[in-house]
Figure (cartoon, rainbow, N blue to C red):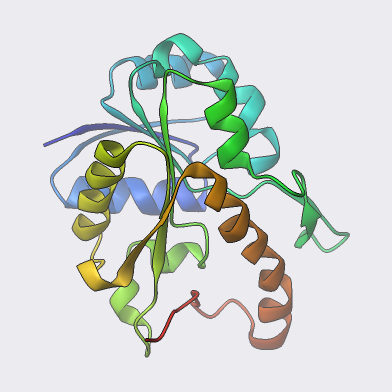
Length: 198
């Protein structure tokens, strides 16, 4: 059993916390208040960033001490939203939230994952007609191995998990969020994910 703090209690945070608890982990969910987030992060071995991507960097910088030496699983995308509330652009073009977090938190092992799908697929990958792909980006091999184990706990088969390399590769997966508004306008909020067929 791993002690996990999920920062963010919206749809993404709620979905992940319920599934991780169901998998046998000791999960604490923190809302957006700084005190709750700091307390949850301090007592955890792994911290999941499910806060809104546009404010994630500021929120997590305030937790520098609590996050030191820990694995930070970043599932958020930092976007500039359009009038309809859907992503219209990237907040960090040419870079990524994951990269900015790693640069700002050098003592933390940032692993980017689960950010290329509708939130319902994060914990139910077998619900799709075609096998989805989940990506890992991060500079620490040990941290990525731990996160790989968490993904398997969430129902991801080993051969559905693709390690892209260092945190710089998060730029590619975060850019994929620009597909999302077009998919939603075309097909609604039906579950979807990126998939690599070989």
